Amino acid sequence: MKNQDSLKTVNPVKQFFINYAVPILFIIMIVFAAPMSGLSPVFLINEVMTRLTRNSFLILSLLIPVLAGMGMNFGIVMGAMAGQIGLILITDWQIVGVPGILLAMLISTPIAIVFGYFTGIVLNKARGREMVTGMMLGYFMNGIYQLLVLYGMGKIIPIRDKSILLSRGYGIRNAISLDGIRQSLDNVIKLDIMGIQIPLVTLAVIALNCLFIIWFRKTKLGQDMRTVGQDMEVARMAGIDVEKTRIISIIISTVLAAYGMIIYLQNIGTINTYNSHEQIGFFAVAALLVGGASVSRASILNVFIGVVLFHTVFIVSPRAGKELIGSAQLGEYFRVFITYGVIAFSLALYAWRNRIEAENERKKAMMLRRASLQNEAEEGGNL
Amino acid sequence: MKKKLIIRTSLIVLLIILGIILFVIGKQHKVLLDNRDLTIDGVTYTAEAAYEIWVDGEKVGRTALNPGRRNVAYVVGPSHEIELREVKNGKPTGDSIVKKFRLSVKQSEVIINIPALAAGSDSFLYEAD
Image (cartoon, rainbow over all chains, first blue to last red; front, side, top):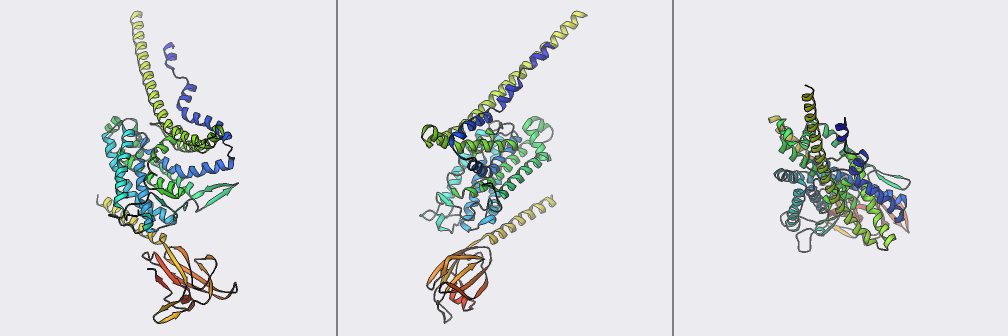
C-alpha cells in the first residue's frame, strides 16, 4: 500500500499547469494588455475573426503529421510556395473571383504533392529529427523557389502580364496585387452581427477541413498513422508500411498548407513574392503551440484556441506597448520575440516533460521491482 | 490494378476539365467603351450623342459617356450584355439599346464602339491592339 501511494508522484494540478503553461501565460498577457490597449471590444473581435478565417486552415494542416508522430511540420513552407505559384499563374492569366481561387488550388495541388513526397522521403531518412530537418528543407526549397520565380518565370514559364514582371523582362516583382481575388471567398456571404463581420463561406471551408481531419482519423490510413505515431516498431510488426504512411501524412499536410496559403493571401490581397511564405511555418507552429498542443499531441480545438490567443496578443501588443512605454515599435518587437519564444519554450517544456515522464517510469519500475523482491523475501521467511 | 489505373486517369482528366471550366468562367476581360468615330468597311459611324452605359447590369462611370471619350469596364466570363441609353441635356431619352456579346479566353482586351453599336452594326466589337 505504501509502495502504491509513493507511485502517485505527479500532482494533477501541477500536471495541468505544466501541460497548459503556454495558453495560461497568453491568457494572463491578454487580461493585462487588452484593457491597456484601449481597443474597443467590437474592433478586437472583428480583428480576431479576420485572423481566425485567415490562419485556421493553414494551422489545421499541421495536425496530420503530429498524428503520424512527425512533430510540427515546418515543411508547410513548401505547401505555401506551391500555393503562391498557383496564385502567380492565375494573376498572370487574369482569372478572378472564386474560380480564380479554385484554379490556384487546382494548380498548386500537383506541385504540393511533389514537394510533399520529396519532403516525406527526406524526413524518413532523418527519423527523430523531423522538425529541424523540415525547417532546413524549407530554407533549401526557398532557394529553388526563388530560382524558379526570379529567373524561370518570364524566361521558361511564359508570363504575359507585364505588370507582374520585373522591368528586365523576366522574374516576378517583389509584390503582386491580388485585386482579382482579394477577399473573394470572404465576401461570398458575409454576415454583419452588431458590427462584427463574419465570412460564412470561409468559415464553412475551414469547417469542412475540420470534418475531413475528423473523418480521416477514423479511416484505416488514419488509424495506421496513429499506430505509426505511437510506436513505429509495433506498427511495422503489425504489417503497416511505416515509410509510406509517413510520406502520405506529409503529402496531405503540404497540400492542405497550399490551400491554406491561398486562403490566407486572398484575405490579405497581396503576395510578397519572396517573403510571404518564409515565416508561415513559424507562425503556424507557434499558434498551435499557444493553443495547448505539443509536439506529440495536437487537436482541432488547439488550433482555434491558439489562433485566438496568439493573434489577440498580436493585435493588442503594439497598442499596449504604445500606452505603456510610448512606442508602438516595442509591441512589434514583442510579436517576434513572442513567436520564437513560444516555440522555444514549448519545445523545451516538451523535452523536460518527456524527461520527467521517463524518470517517473524508471522510478515506478524500480519500486515495483523492489516490492516484488520484498514480497518474495517475506514469502520465503514465512515458509 | 487496371481498375485502379482507370479510376486515377479518369480523376486526372476530370480535374483537367474542371481547370478548363474554371479558366473560362473566371477569365477577366478589359472592355474599352469608345464613344468615338469609327469607319468599318467604308461605313463611318460618327459619335454625336452621349450615352449612359451598363455592362452586365452595372453602370459604367458616374456620368454619361460624351462623344470623343472612352471609359473602361471589367467583365468576367464568356457571355455579357451591354445596355445603352442616349442622354440629352443631362436626361436619358428614347429606348435603351441592349446587345449581348461573347468573349473568348484569348480576348483579354477588347473595344466596343458605341456609335457602331447604337447604329445596329454587328462589327461594334473588336480586339484592342
